Image (cartoon, rainbow, N blue to C red; front, top):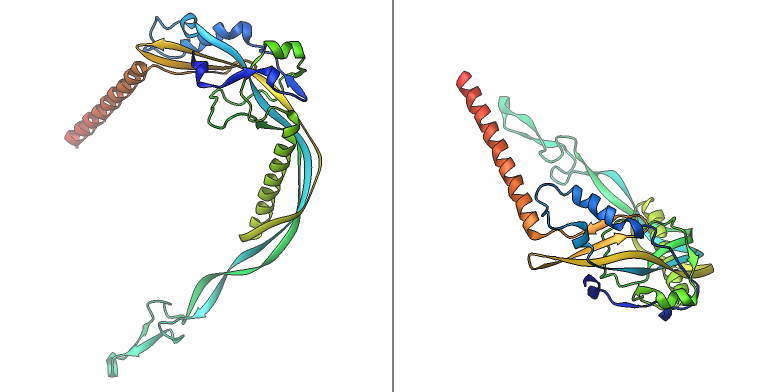
Length: 296
């Protein structure tokens, strides 16, 4: 099955404050896949029905941190403000040019660098120390609690999905994607790291609004009201086979968004059709140009 690409464990392995959302689209998954197939065009194989695509699939839950907290920090940096200023032209020493020739041929030749002004407009950066205070807050911020190497291609999750507390009995029956951390209390450290990262980003933005930034530092960090929980979010994963290819399927069981890998043969047929259409269009354009040339 496609699920073997993931490390799956029992929800009994996690501890602490845990919530989950029900797979609201469980009874609609076949309809969702049928609708997706109906939009794939003439090259989609008739034998690849929704039943075939969903033949091997599994409902899993992905672990997500829900984080709370607030932080305040003082930033300092060297900030450069850009200015224009005029300097004496180094080609003509500020004279704007020089007289050339003799007698009736004597004339003033303007400096090629400053065009006769004797000055050059130059851009420079004035550096100075700047500081300020930044504040950030997390009220239910979402951070993935699984390997960043795993990618779900079903779009954004439903942040408004209804959550319920997970019971011990439900945990025994539930299969989840292996989390990076098993305990919700470890989310406190994740929340602290996230708050510090946001402080740095906000400090950098504040300094950048003044000018160029270097040697940015954030200190005197005060972090309060930290808390976290693990949210188990329902996803369908599966695999189907076609022409010796093993192809994956993913479905968000709250939003109904689906990702289904397309067989290579279908991709090639679509590409060839696009090339044929492009060639035909270019041929028509060439014919029109030829006819216009003849008429003129």
